[in-house]
Length: 166
Image 1 (cartoon, rainbow, N blue to C red):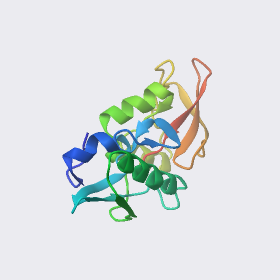
Image 2 (cartoon, rainbow, N blue to C red; image 1 turned 90 degrees about the vertical axis):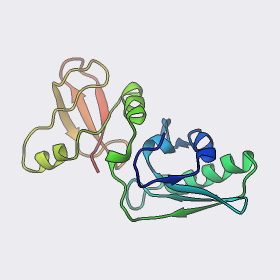
Image 3 (tube, helix red, strand yellow; image 1 turned 180 degrees about the horizontal axis):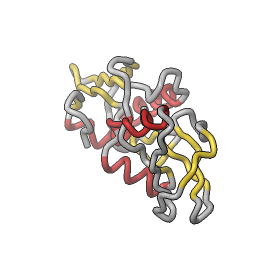
Image 4 (cartoon, helix red, strand yellow; image 1 turned 60 degrees about the vertical axis):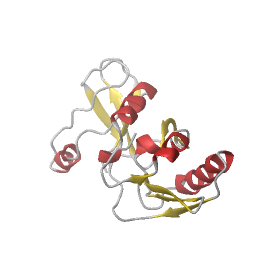
């Protein structure tokens, strides 16, 4: 599934790359995460460009290695390059990826303006992925990874991660 129009991915490679999971969120493929910006077969070899979800993301080395392993298993030698421009955004997460996050118990990111509203001290309406209540509160702006915040549902009392808008 191609998330944005600025991706350049050879159709033959999509099914291979969809099997590579994000190591921090294993139910999410790197394709659904939107980190693969290009993947082309050039003279029988594959060149893949990936963008980190944020600068210094520790998962990028693992993702690069996993891409190489998956492509090698499919019979391709590959090179994986990290690109920083354009910067990754949560807008690149596919609808299937957002659903996978929610099913896994992580509230998917709201629209980007929601986090700007928080800076202006307006409350964002994050839905609990467990009971679907919007009666939720921020416990910490820092969750299990740098790209998540920790929330708690006031109805079911369960804590959950919210994938911050980036």
